[in-house]
Length: 206
Image (cartoon, rainbow, N blue to C red; front, side, top):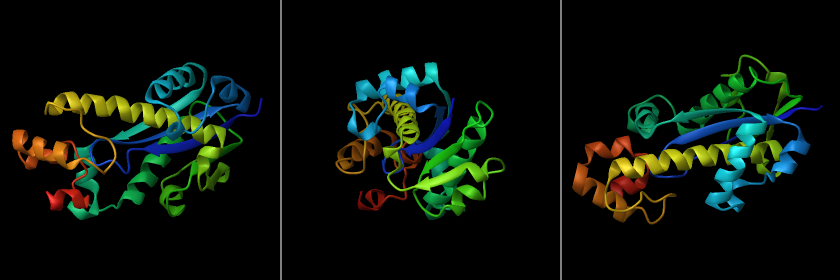
């Protein structure tokens, strides 16, 4: 059986919420049988349903970065790293975890920036890595996109409950100002860093 792996992320463009990287390792037949395709093209309910099947039938790894930790690390908020550098570390961590569970022929990474951001953090399996733009066209990457999206959504729902501002925290980066203003009104500006990526220009506009 030819095992393949794919890696993708979720949350990097969302003002509120975590950044999540995931890897999935399986064979194409299993992924096809599960109904895997790009997570952006399926409903929230289907994302959770397929994620459940992937976790049941495939090897997978998930690495998360909270908004608070993200802000501590980001260059624009006093840290040492930009977004792509952090994504490189997250992907490398997920790759290291997946290699403990399976031995894929290739590991396809959805290309988000310089390949070196991932490669310098990878200790094993560098010869297996393939970087592909719009990688979700590959089944293993599409599977990883579903696992990453499902984890992001679960964490996002938890943050919404914790924020308790009378509305769900919106996803994405558009149409978030009303929620951000309400959050600041209830909890103050300092607390925003525990829920949002505060280097986004939205914060200055507020």
